[in-house]
Each structure stands twice: as C-alpha cells, then as structure tokens.
Image (cartoon, rainbow, N blue to C red; front, top):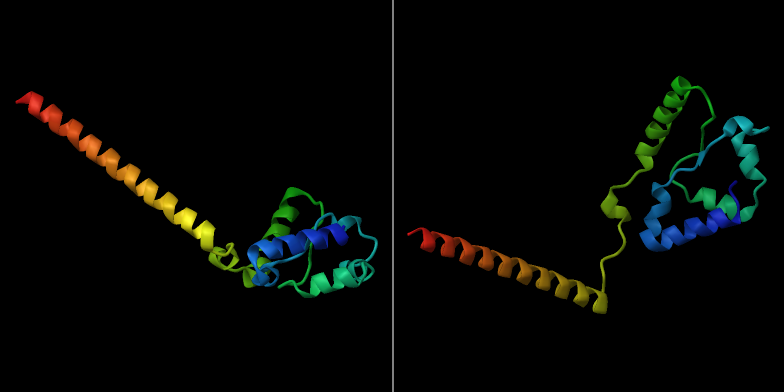
Length: 136
C-alpha cells in the first residue's frame, strides 16, 4: 500500500542519496491482480502527499501480477525495460563525500592503512633477505 509511511521512507532515502534519487526511481505495484480498479484509479484515491510523491518519480508505475513463472519472467523483463530509462549510475546516487572531521578521519585511516602495508612489505622483505642470507 502506498501511504504515509512509504512516503516518509522515500523521503529518508532522498536525504541519504540526494535530490536526484526520485528521478531514478520507479514504483512497482506487486499483486496487481488483486486490485479491483486500475492502478491509476487506485493511486488517485491515496491523497495529496502520495500524489506529490508519485509526481517526483522518474517513470510511470508498473503493475506486476502473481502469475505462472513464464508470465512472471515477461513482467520482469518489462520492469527492466521501464527501469532502464530512469536509472542512474551508482555514483549519481552515492552519498556525498565526507566533510570536515569525517574527511579528516577518513584521510587518517587511509594513511594508517598505507603505513601498515608499507611496514608489512618491509617485514616481508627482511624475512626474504634473512632466508637468502642463511642459504649462503
């Protein structure tokens, strides 16, 4: 059911992924075979918050029914076809890079990791040299 909690969850995702998130989203109505009206009529009666939510999406709602496997695979193929034009690259949906303290901590972690790797390489080289020295 598309209602207030769904819209709130969508708003939370938008805060995480940014304003372009909605344009890269598609509403998929599962169990559409249980609807007594068309999907557009069903959604029209959901209220202004849901109508605003639906207007922000990048593609038209897609209905998928519970069907035998061969019909379901055709429905999934339609879903992929509909999703392709509104999809965005993962980098467009990625959270923003860290800033200030978080960025500094990230740089410190990277420097620490590089230093650990350098020390491990040096230790390995010393072990190899020691083994060669013992062989002589």
